[in-house]
Image 1 (spheres, rainbow, N blue to C red):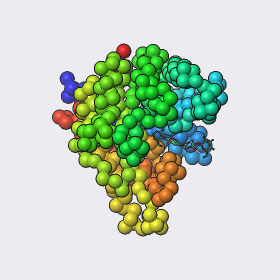
Image 2 (image 1 turned 90 degrees about the vertical axis):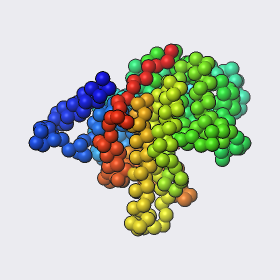
Image 3 (image 1 turned 30 degrees about the vertical axis):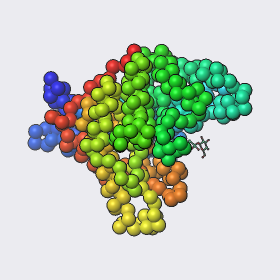
Image 4 (image 1 turned 60 degrees about the vertical axis):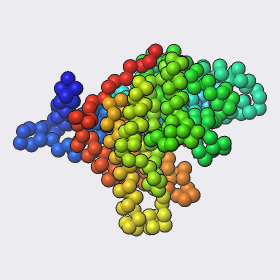
Length: 396
Ligand code: G3I
């Protein structure tokens, strides 16, 4: 049965290619290397996604951005326009326009949408943070505001969102103070960690069918196994406790922001982590993958001795995450956080030392080695170790 589904998916790929103008015959089979990431991903029921910068999508002087989003990806995430400061810049006044545009674009292009993000300590509107800090918003009122925000946003997009990042980056890092891992940030400080369970319950009440995710970075693989310093273990324990308390969490989003200057992981370590989360009954997804490099003087001067190893290491790390995802049937999607170096958060964020080269296309929309390796991973994988995804049922 499983093999039958896989063969059926392959037949869909052939049929899609034929529709796209490349008729496959026995003597002229379709060249899979010419197919898009989205077509190749669907061989495995795996959705390949990108974060979308709405300004770039709207820029008529930059048509390749829009064309590439629709051609290569089967799921999209709003890079910024579904965040609280964008949706409700003034208290009680919602600005749905840009997010609705993305939803409409996705519909036209037969793409699924990841909703990002309902509860996060960053990109909150000033009226909210100022009100809490000057005492005009009490703790009780803050909780009501959060519940209302989740209900309003999830209801607005009801039926249009495949996966919601309900809570984002709630756990500290070893370099924070104190170094023992803990719940960090605005919401934990003002409401205590119970806001996490509340947020999932409120989101479920507003949309019975969206998959509800916890999303974080630096959780690609397990470390020491001690939740005091192993963030993946901390998140695993959190998810287990939420499930024990019958909180409707459906998945764990592993962001996948890596850098070539770090040790990183091998495929087996990452696959093992995904399998452990699947063992709890959760889906997984890579939600924000990019692999940045330090822009040394040599890189900036165009020295190939410095550029080549970085591009190759970046490609290798994309491949590690994608192969691990392919290896687990509960890993439902693989989203890159921007696909071209022309529009990437990395150079504006990491300036000392400067970092860049993080995406799968260069600034001129030329595919990089990372793009080709992703394709190869999607092409040269299949039974018995890579099988179609298992759809996740929303937990009620
Ligand atoms: O909206 C203003 C605009 O009005 C102004 O003209 C412009 C001038 O700088 O700034 C605009 O805001 C910027 C916003 O992106 C929209 O472009 C902010 O300064 C900038 O800080 C913000 O950065 C975003 C960052 O989240 C903020 O936390 C990045 O684009 C976005 O890629 C990044 O995404 C996060 C995920 O949501 C969560 N995981 C980590 C990931 C990377 O940091």
